[in-house]
Length: 199
Image (cartoon, rainbow, N blue to C red; front, top):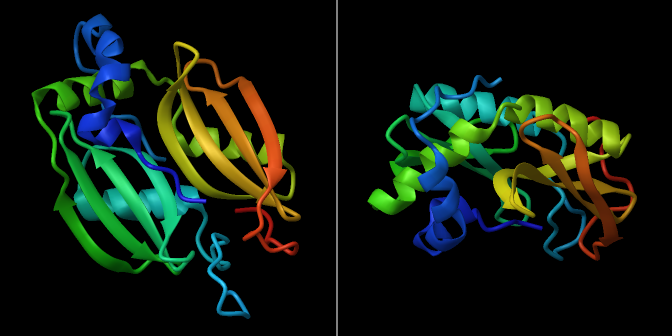
C-alpha cells in the first residue's frame, strides 16, 4: 500500500509547524546509508531492498537525505523523495531492479514546507537504513515496501509498511533512539501470501 508522503506537500505544513519552530539550526543530512494475475498488487517484485533503492536514488540526486521510499505503479516502480540541505525536495522514480525511470526532478515546496523538512531531518538520529533493519527485526521474514520520515504522537519516527504472509504490518521506529513504537498488522488483500523475504 503506497503511503502519501506528508512532509513533502503543502498539506503537511500544519502538523510540522511546531517541530520546525523548535529547530534552531538545520542539521546535517543523514547518511544513507509480479503478479501472475492482472489484479494490481502492492507487493514489489524481488530486487534491491528499500535501503538499496534509497542509496541509488540519493546517488542520482548527489546530495541530501532520503526521507521516503514507496512502491507505486502496482509495485513496478519505487518513488523516492530526497530532502536537500535547504529543505527543498527532489523526486526520483526507479524500477524494481534499481534503474532510474524518471528524475531527479524538483517537487513543489514553499518556505514553510522547506523549514519543516529541515527540522524533521535534523531531529532524526536514526538513518533510513538503520530503521529499515529494525523493521525487519520487528517482522522477521517480512519485506519493507514503504518507509518515510514522519511524526507519531509528538515524536519523529520512521514509518513503514512490512508485508509478510498476506499481512501488512504498520511499523513505526523512533527516529531518535531506534525503539519500536508500533507494530500493528492487518490483512492486505493485495499482498501475496508468498511475499519474498529479507528486503
